[in-house]
Length: 152
Image (cartoon, rainbow, N blue to C red):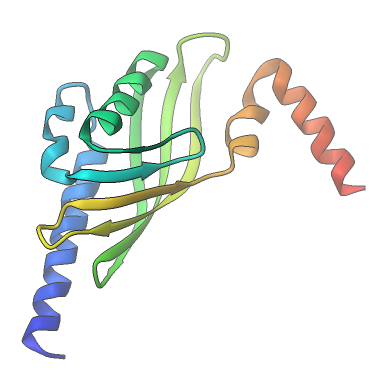
């Protein structure tokens, strides 16, 4: 392994550590640090959103804080290679309406970093039906019936 390869590994690990810290300490106040973690024209995609740029990514996080109480991410695993990384996580929160108790969504994220260690591409993967819809009172009942019917 060359010195350049070792430096690139260290750079990715540093960028990944910064990203994990950002998510694990996410708050309305910490959103001001978004520019240190995401490149200006970064893309962000999850099951509900596909946007680009700081303002659009910031709007997604601000909306999250309006919709749920006590949101927090717990990063379970992470690995980086080259300019990219993959994380598995749990998103824990309380819904402001309808469902009592803490909710948990399990998912994964693939990111790519630029030369400055900022995220240029962020894509979340998680099953909306299993992780969200099935947990809602009325819709959850319908989703579970459909799931059982599909297994027959």
